Length: 200
Image 1 (tube, rainbow, N blue to C red):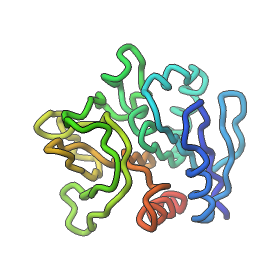
Image 2 (cartoon, rainbow, N blue to C red; image 1 turned 90 degrees about the horizontal axis):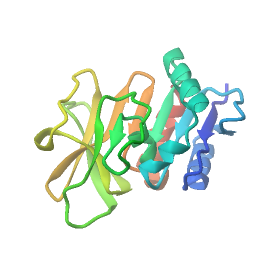
Image 3 (cartoon, rainbow, N blue to C red; image 1 turned 90 degrees about the vertical axis):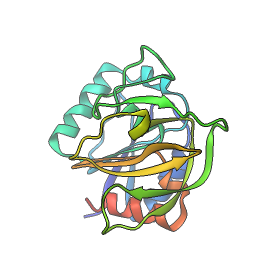
Image 4 (tube, one colour; image 1 turned 180 degrees about the horizontal axis):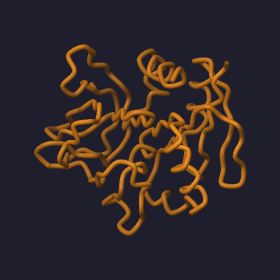
């Protein structure tokens, strides 16, 4: 069966490149807004912009997304989408995330922001996987280690370092996938990751 991937359109940019990448890996694309919920097998929450976009998610959309998460529908959050899966962000105090990951999102400590370009994502404590380079464009992250969110052992994670700041570049927890990098802009490695996602 061909995967039918619903892409959440909540007024955030960078949708076209996600649509094109999903089609390249064999998925059919459906648009999902708060007023229209088509039949689908997967959900992608894309995003490039500010965490304030979370204020545009209606209560109905939040409730439905959480319901689908609980049913086991595979969901991928990309960049801002990953951040919205978390609890909150320093970028937009008072705006609530979806709360699926128990982490706050913090501003990178680096002097040069945003963090733009290619960087390496290393699998956390997994020697059977190889590090890959992906394309990043962001200033806020889920921090790790020295700046300190305590790590939850059940997570599968990839970590990236930028100017001495160690942050979480990907999380894989059961049906929830989240990447701080943009797989749709990351060439072959990014398409391979998307292909794995739509095969779930």
